[in-house]
Image 1 (tube, rainbow, N blue to C red):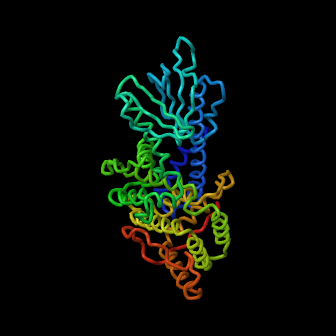
Image 2: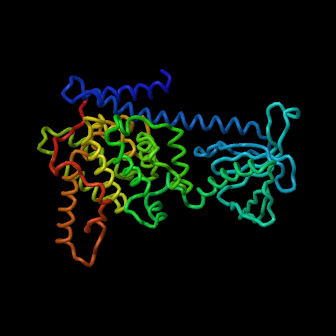
Length: 434
């Protein structure tokens, strides 16, 4: 079967699952199938996206005449942004620019009559992390001055019109600002919090998305499951990465786009909410509980889950609390939004618990990962109660002269996200084999 059909099948399974109840015959088989299909769909979707982007960059590279290899396809995260003619580049006329997410290529524009397939003769490759766009009293309304730090030089780009200059200046500024430490996507959690001067205990993008969804997303059917508009989510991401999130009109932003943005941020954390080193520990714990003869082992299992959460770094622990308190809130409205704890777990599990290297073998563990996340949601209050008890016991037994982040209560999450469920242990969930 073509790989992209798996993504369609995954969406179909999720839709069926949302309208099913645990008492239905075959529900557990459907649940496990949806979990595995979701993980495989994400794996394939990422592969298709990478391959598509690589094909675009390869096609661009083939239109550049160069005496040395440009290596444009060596960076899997590189994205082609735009290209176009420019009146002058320095003292050279008839210039051409190709802008990527991390590079700017300059060269001579080759006319169609001189070459059937080549667009540009390469002059220089500029690393965008080394440039600064400067204002100069000498510049005209159609010029952009670029200062390069290594080696030190300055290049003038002269355009044919002020509108062309404005368009290029906007795109160049956006990309350069990413390298001025304004980027939040794909950046370690602690770095984002430091960038925001820790004005909030969780990243502002997460708290903002939660506020918007609290206002207009809790009743939205399939929230977090139904994909938002990819182009809108990409635009919102660019605004956050360029420090322009204040320009977003949240009142006119669809709830599914906001949910997609929040989910994308969590998925792109370089170290997931549960760091890579916890993956084997969580899977070993879940397999052990699955093999237990009865549910009497559940309190011990839940205690060990609580211990793993307690071992998270303070920043990850606070984000865990904020996220799962919010997911509990979403699950309260499951009759309207069709997103019970099980369905939320199917969506979030591969984003917050993942191995260092994704393989087909680890994809087959998705049912166990999903059940683990479901148990976090269903038993969130009991987990926090367990952690508080552990912290109290630790303070009593350890000398106060040797504190650690484990024997003190980490900073609480934002007060606007309080647990919606009552503090009781719910029915335990196990991975059910077909």
